[in-house]
Image 1 (tube, helix red, strand yellow):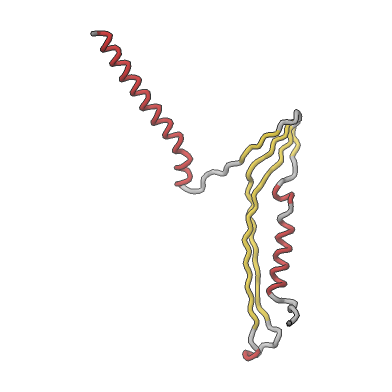
Image 2 (cartoon, rainbow, N blue to C red):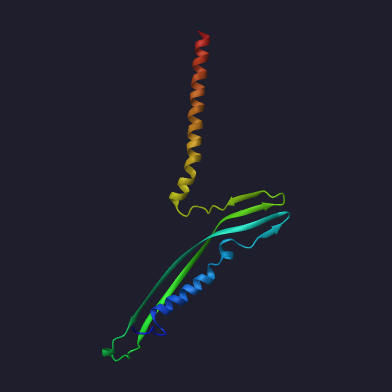
Length: 142
């Protein structure tokens, strides 16, 4: 079996994974506590990764040497705040979610649907109450 070459794809991927490991330590996800007036805030985040790589060995027919290799690898990380843990001096703990604003028009529409439904329902109920009151007054007048 041929020994792995110094610049092989396996070596590139190994280096990339080591760098990802350094970025994704526990302090990245559960942040450093922040003390403020008897309250401790602990940030909580979500981290996503993407990674890719590729390589090739050049043929000796094209004039390259036996050890000719070309390759590359890349990684990307995304860190998003999710919530804060709020710890009070009395020992109570509360989770305060951080909801990012909707990124699309559809997302904003979905967020406003419950409010619109409540307003329409309130309007219909109000109209029904007015109608019932008028009918009751008409019955009473007779």
